[in-house]
Image (tube, rainbow, N blue to C red; front, top):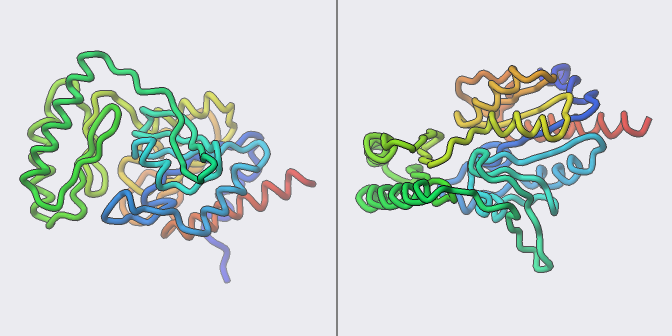
Length: 270
């Protein structure tokens, strides 16, 4: 059997003095599902994350578009694992209480009075769109709101997205970010690329590995190639991308990460 195409490319991560592993959640560690609250990680990745967070000279972080609380509720990760929500607007850790409940521990997103008012208007505007487009739904975040259309009839979903783009997405002070069957509107500017740059500075990483599946991950892929450290960017699934590696799905990503974990563990003990 031929070795995977990525085996040689990951050596820069295997041998890094300080490695940062940043991973998207939906569509990357967890298969996409119609209802975001039903998403769960692939079982083999749950055990793998336990290994990754214990590796020496390695920092593993979730970087998700989800709000922190939503991410914590679905991501079966080790206690106190670092996590970034809302595309970089929320920074914290996922904690587990004595009953096994997971929560997102982080500072509240600081918004000005003007931004809070705009956030309220955004939520109301998306609520109005959802009310007239069956099958769509709203997800509320501390600094924004997401319109989900995956469960709607295709034309209804397109109409809802168009209404959002022509309406609240065009307001002053609002930034929009399109993903797979979603449109996020926010009163703060935050991208996964900016979050990744900050993570590298905080951790002192000499190499960064980022994996994601959506168009919202492209800013991180782009950042990987423009940082002053070595980098590996991994597109999960199909679609155009500026990432320098591609894997078919979360299962193959798990194989890649497991190989990195195995080799880094071996190097640390030889």
